Length: 183
Image 1 (cartoon, rainbow, N blue to C red):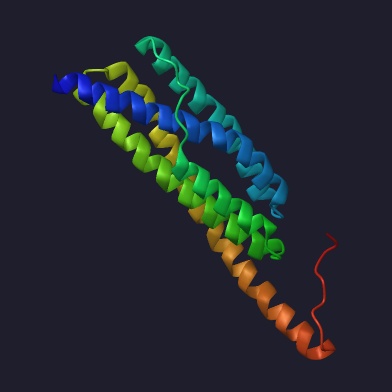
Image 2 (cartoon, rainbow, N blue to C red):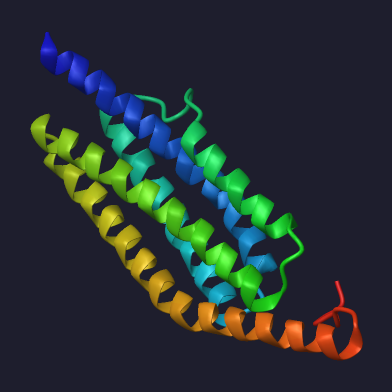
């Protein structure tokens, strides 16, 4: 029966999202700690709280389906989180690091927007309008987060460019790179 196959795909995709959000709950504190901009750090901390509510919404959907949210690992998010960790491990400082963190976070948001858009449409086709409403709320929040990151990136990227110019001037004057801050 096609409806049962679509329902199973829907459940599998929801499990994937649950795994993705759970991975983010662990990754966001690390991103917040690495951020040099107070505004970016605060944004990551707020998004952590929002992500916890996304997990709760998914748990609510699973409960109504009488299904477990566990049992699937989101390898897409695993890769995106790994890329974000690599940015943190690089030798970037201040605004350059923040620019990298914003890029990593925006990739995560776009992945989530695609995933939530997909499951939301599945929910509608399956007649799960309560689910669709919950999923649309999360999708809207993901879009808002991406827009905030895009706006913040404008200033951070400009600062990163200026920091790069200062470092080149310091290097040419002193013959070596001047550290910006102690590690």
